[in-house]
Image 1: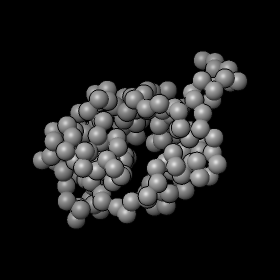
Image 2: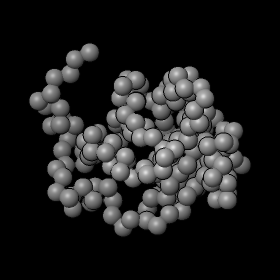
Image 3: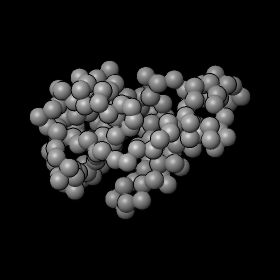
Image 4: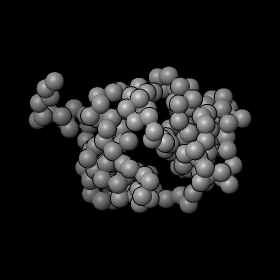
Length: 169
């Protein structure tokens, strides 16, 4: 589920939603991983609300929340953040330079006893929440902003991005 916009992050330097969606689809090559824009279609703003709707709509589906270490550092500021940990298993992927702060942060400390070992990775979707794992992966040396800049992608503000688009309800 690619989020339209994290309310805690600026749109400045953020790739457009469609580009982030396509990038996620290109990276998710496992047949059991489905990348979707459903949060945009649902019109939900907060992850906890989106997960509640999804679990109700798809009661037999096994969900795993996937996020980077940068989000683990700030998830304790998210709306109903403990509900997220209690609703679905969570996979957190290493992102420089956030790893140490993420693992020492409020959320990691609050749910420390539910952190699973790497050997349980193939079981994560089947685990009863709260259950979470931190995946130490080979890190890309560049940030998302640097990667977009190297591709020549324009950095623009939210105001500029929506300047010529009319939004109707």
